[in-house]
Amino acid sequence: MRILLYTGKGGVGKTSVAAATGLKLSRQGYKTVVISLDSAHSLADAFDLDNDLIRQPDDPVCQIDDRLWMQEINIQKDIKQYWAEIQSYLQTVLNVSGLDEVVAEEVAIFPGMEEVCALLYINQYYRQKSYDVIILDCAPTGESLRFVSIPTVLNWYMKHIFKLERKLAGVARTFVKKISSVPLPKDDYFQNLENLFDQIEGIDEVLANPEITTVRLVTNPEKMVITETQRAFMYFCLYGLTVDAVIINRILPDTVGEPFFNSWKQTQQRYIDEASQYFTNVPIWKIYLLDDEVLGIDGLTRLGDQLYADVDPVAFYRTEKSYQFHKVDDQYQISLLLPFIEKGEVQLAKRAEEVIVQVGGFRQHIPLPRSFMNAEPSSAKLTGDRLVITLADVQSG
Image (cartoon, rainbow, N blue to C red; front, side, top):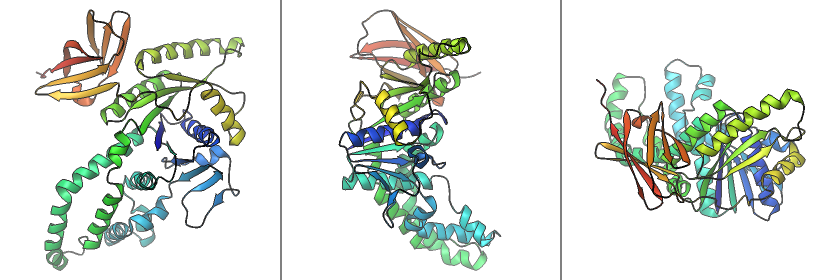
């Protein structure tokens, strides 16, 4: 099975790219599902489908053609299926606090529920081998990072907190009931949590396996978007996922020759050149602006044919992380993949929130995690096909 995550800053066109990829793969013979993880769903709009969707009763997916399905997470419906006891407890607490019963039902959804529901579906489809390819139309970058971090957080909670919390609630429930109107969760609540964890257990290994899952970052040739894409690239590496392509969307084609667009074309080219410095270890694919909006099967077909004219959408274009971050004793290390670099003088510099590495004619900008911000580069050495950069922590004051 193949899992592809498409994400990027809001408005860059990631939903259209994800939908076009799904359509392309289904026509190549792969049984494919495209799942929207964005709470502001627009996947059905991209396919321009409404009442003609082939929907089976109680089936969360909609069939588009013989080998293509799409799914938009319905959090209200899924809560009743997966979170019944948890939602019931939250509603009770909110109702006791004074909220109207209807309002309590509406707000009894805590952050992360939608992402966990998505993980449940993905793990279910993976375990059952329901599809050949799962395409994830992710939310904007920040929410996507929360999505990929949830399995690790839940795993830690279940190992270190859950059992103790369950025992304490059982002991204290009778006592608290006598002195407070706010109820403690019943054992059904904890059983619901345990069942949920069992259903998503192992998904963290699936997402972090570069021979199954890779991330593709969709961006535009604009300063703010490229900068956010650079940060996203770093954070996905930090969370253990592999980015195997960067897609620059909405580039003005050469056929646009009116003087009004000359400055725009120069600006876009400048940021395309910058992207080639930032993302040296992954392929950069380009999508030129079409002459009409990308909508429906015809529009998505045109987009997919352009994007995948020379590349296979299901192939792996990198199975090794470009950046790896470590802490050894009191020093931080960045391991940078440089498979073709030769030994020579390495120049290091730090500027704001990034380290700049230059070896001969090669130059790479590496955004830093927050924990590295007070560290300064002190040494660098080539180890195999990786450059290992050591940063020493600089104490303030």
